[in-house]
Amino acid sequence: MNRVLTCFCVCASAIGVAVALPAQEDGANGAAATDAAMDGIDPALVKAAAPKPAAKHFHSLVRLARADANVLVKLPKQQDFKSAVEGKYYPNGSVFRVSGDAAATAEFEFGKDSVLKTFGDVEFGTREVEYGAQTRTVTLARGNITVSLPLTLPTGMFSVAYPGFTVKDMAGESRHEFVPSGDGCEVVVHVITGMLALDGAHYSVARMNAADKIRIRSTGDALFTSLRGEAGDYKVSLAKGDTTYRDPITGAVSNQVNHLDYSLTPQCAIKIFRKRSQVGGRMVVSVMTFDASGDMRNRYTFAEGAANVNFGEEVVRIQDISFKTKSDKKGAAKGDGGKEAGKTEDGESSGDAGSGESGSGESDSGAAFGDNS
Image (cartoon, rainbow, N blue to C red; front, top):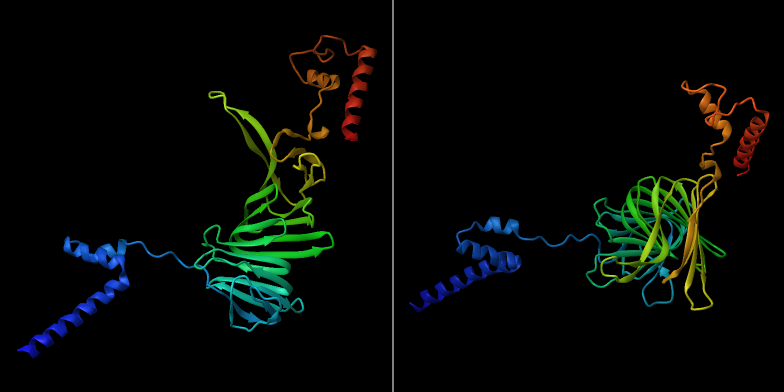
């Protein structure tokens, strides 16, 4: 009798363990399904409605997937570069140097469908992230790279950082060309597919789409930045400094940050000059915009955080203004069937030599003024 009871208890315990293990694997979903079964609800419906774990977009480490060139790596907190091994994973915070001719390439895998490809001589690093973090940032020091990401990648997940600005909210494929110079650097960002955004000092681009291209040049001291449109049409938001605003109801006074949205099309340019004020130490910023023909369209200056130092203007070209002269009025009068051909609007005779010379002289003067502009 005791043997029968012992066998029965062992079998019951085994069945209980077999039932408990799936419940532990399912965690809260298993508990919810059990409660639902007790309430008479189909457990399958509860499991289907349970929230799914967040998708993992990147690997925990960076993998050197393929290399036709020589690749060196410097691990975090190390001083020397060592040869990188194809197929091996490296921690975030590592710095990579790729050397070879223009045809030599190397591919670094950040995720299943997230790949960075280098061309020729390239140096870039990866920023350290907290364990479990899903964002990745590449710091490009020189060379040409192509970043291929899923088109459905959420915003804020992948960025490429440069001196003075950051390319962020990337999705799809984009090409980045970084050429250091003696006094700074020049960067060309080209969106091939998908989209991205730019965030720099005193300027930003909310979105660049496929085929958009921009060239950014900046000095090493960050006191000058120029942006030039290479392809496409996108809005650049330029800081215009603070202005004082008084609420008409409450009378509360506050500072508001103003922006100028400028369309950067091919050959259009933006120039930003910065200088630290000797009195007070504020940064003083001067901005100028130019259209495709090289004519200035906007110019203004402001001091950061000082609403009382903020002035500027929109430059209007003379040829954009329509001048009305007496000769124009005479032509309009001749074309009006309700008036006599020999009369002006004022009823004066056009046969008056003095009036004719005066009208001709003003017309020539206006035309010459427009040509000189």
